[in-house]
Length: 180
View 1: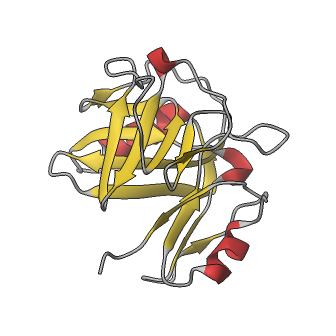
View 2: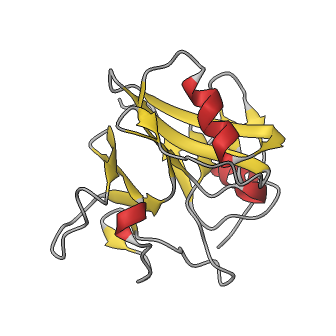
């Protein structure tokens, strides 16, 4: 059931938690979602414009579904479909600034395979501005996939005590924990 990130965080004080993907008014996932090997819902975004975040055995990947769509018999431990790419294959993925402002969240991977959980929660910016700031960060991002933004965006982590609660309840989250 949907909850604020702070409520999710109370159950997992040792984890880094960020809002998950887009959801509809019934709080069902708007895109392809797999949790613990089980498909949640039946909805899926257009694969030609979306990406797929996968996590398996501690390895995080962001897959461009326009180049490598989800196969009918493919299985996942965890998978979350979202859009748009902010950075795809190291290059800008948004050409025009819509001017629509919101809090933002994304998952990124750099050229060395490091994973970044990125949240802009203290201000509202456009997706284009978000992309531009990521490119100016000095990090060699390979892939950056936008997550659900607006009031859903937030981040909680025990490491460093960073806390930006979501402004609305969210039904899905992405949880990162240190592998033991």
